[in-house]
Image (tube, rainbow, N blue to C red; front, top):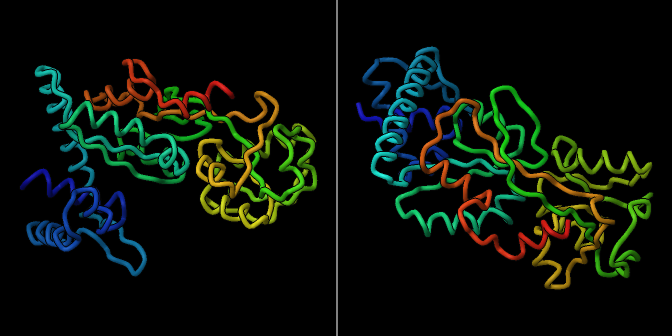
Length: 308
């Protein structure tokens, strides 16, 4: 039996999706289905229960999944040790990242990494923070990147960067004439917010409470792109990372207003499973993210961090 088949099976279980497993392994969905049927024929057992909206391993499937994960992890460590001997930086790296960081901050780092290490293969998964912690703990991804990282059992947190959050408004909003705004000015304003379980929303709520400021939340969304669209139609104000609105500010559809220095800073951290042996690819990518190997951080990212 080939290890690739076991990896595909594990990817199906972890993503609960044949199509996502196909994407991860650069094959068609029908090829994934054939691999799973081959395993079920080999062991004469149904390994996956296929529901209308989800799938889950059967008892036999769970046994095969656990054994396969152990086998694949041991093989990965063997490959890593061989790469260390040959000084090779090659192989896969799976990174789970929140949408705002993945779309607006990570791309230049990924581009530079692939430019340096042509044999490396990075797969970026966009997900919500709570699921990223679970993926890192379950060894489903090698690294996680989240905002406002919190301590979790079995997970180490490494520093990445610090974001500046800004107030965004429609160009015709009364606050648009300000270059800097005090937090108390937000009292009673119509507000477009992230959903309650998103760490950036919780952090903004804490700052507002400390300042004794109550806003009128009119809409809640799970992603910054929809929040920006709502502010563009003057549905309300919003607080978002400065880097996420560069295009809209440049095009004049939104205005970004600073807060007093240090009012809204967003810590971004790298999550690694505690005790996990790091591959050469992991080590090099972490070093690049932390700016320890001479990589010149893109000016727009550096300026955002310095202003904050």
